[in-house]
Length: 377
Image 1: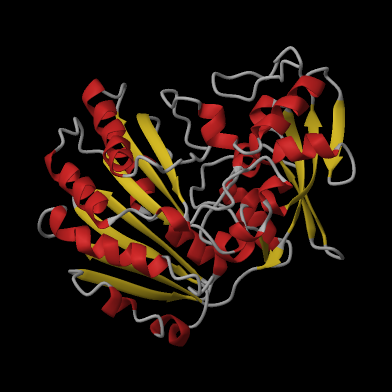
Image 2: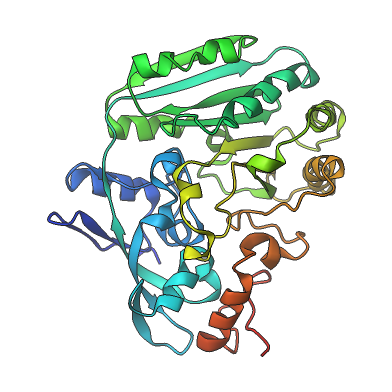
């Protein structure tokens, strides 16, 4: 797909045409250079637009603007019968529905038309580091973070995440607004036990995007071929982790055999605009997610059984304390050991996707172990 690099900006509508082989770093630069425009997307510059825009694509702007796929207004896609069609809300709408969240099982997108926004103005990059003591000693700070983000009145200008890794814990993110607005959130007092803090005002959009690549996860794996195993859980506002669950999780991080120094656990706030769009508007199903938990074990060559068991144990520790909770999983984090993967990725949209699959790809040409299967009847 690397040769699908077409780009155009209609400056009367500010609708951009983007080739599906474009990496996010180039998407950002081309949109900016075509009139100071942007869309919501993730922070990893090496990710390709084709996969990112068709699986979800969330990032720092998502609370204000929605996911990356929420910006798509039309696609060009190659179907299983080799036909090349356009799909939108009014043309081949079932194809359009499936492409926006489950495209890998339905066709090959070669081109996107997306609505765009003016690039944000001032932004604040912040981080608070906790690098002393056990993980158990950091559990209360995580509880404070979870309580803080559960406020339905929390500004949509704020993006925040918690990252746990071998050296400790970092609470970081971006605020799209002025220093004065950011200071009014009083994050220093919300997380008073940090050992280090960094608050940086950034006025240049491309400079801000460049700062996102300093994320700890990207430092560990960004752009480097490596083996990894990952799992994901989606948490709804009604399904926050109880205090005892947080304690068990942080104790597990202190005591478990990890098998590698290259691991991290990330809690990423969603909500905002992503929750405003109806669940049945597109294949992407997790409109009720407040935050995602993403866990990674990383190694060179092959991930050991010890590391895989460690990553699996993170989920097991949480689900054991929350036995009545039905967790979803973001389909961008492929987990071959996830039972009933299709249900976790796409419910409650799975039955509609299966019917569309039967209509346009009955022989399951576009197949992977966890893709949508054709309906049987």
